[in-house]
Length: 116
Image 1 (spheres, rainbow, N blue to C red):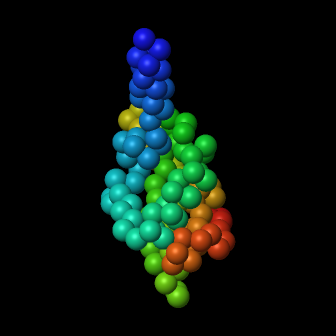
Image 2 (image 1 turned 135 degrees about the vertical axis):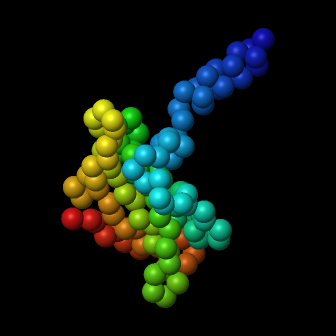
């Protein structure tokens, strides 16, 4: 009985906490979803997802990640944010609403470059 209650509680908790990255995209629909393939890319993307999670959680904020490769095999993950408001809904890029996170090829954090 206790096992059933514990499982039911976990199902309810996880279903109510959908990730911001699974929200429908209105502002960044032209950008393909991030598809990390190497262990370093996966580590870098997960780091950025955790880092921007709080600012991407509100329903009127939409976020997007892009994955690129920079010089010296560095991995770059660009996090962008936009505000969705109005009727019909329109997107407004947030001022300073993007930053570029730079990682080594192994996914070790190097630095962040803030957008202006």
